[in-house]
Image (cartoon, rainbow, N blue to C red; front, side, top):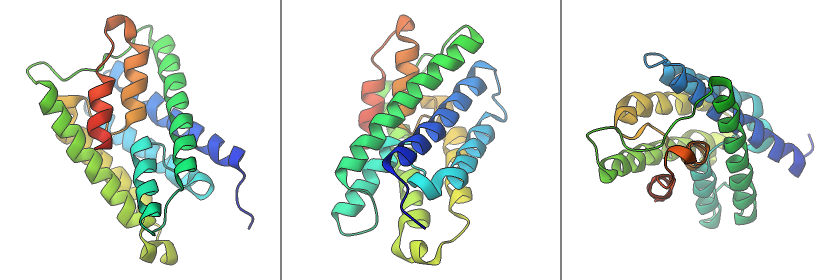
Length: 206
């Protein structure tokens, strides 16, 4: 089987990231507090299984950067050029998704720590759960042993990590764990205040 083209990889990353962030917006604006985390994790899992064979199913700049570090250390992953391309595509897809859910609901989300919490509370939550997400991705989808064995549970493991983060830290930071999510939410709600994406992204990439 031939290697997917660059266009195919970028399209897969765009579609997967768009679906993920559109689902995030629809759940939050639609008031799906109880099942929102499951819904978001489910669409991520479906996108990973559907598109992972084409692009690797990153859909998250933090995952792409982690894979770049892995490659630089001699393990499986992405070269830095591909990391940059993926991160750019994911950011554009996220902004497009945010525009779509804002038009659909006639309103947008505002990125900020929840009431009663400070920036460092939200930052710590984003740091810990983004670490957990990328750690799981590396161990179930990118580790040499699992790449050779081609396990079929990697998408489920990654999705359950998102569920854990959504219910564990969502009430503090909003539960982004993805720089593309933080950026698109902040851009789409610029009229309500802009700037929180910077510390969120900093903690997510730390």
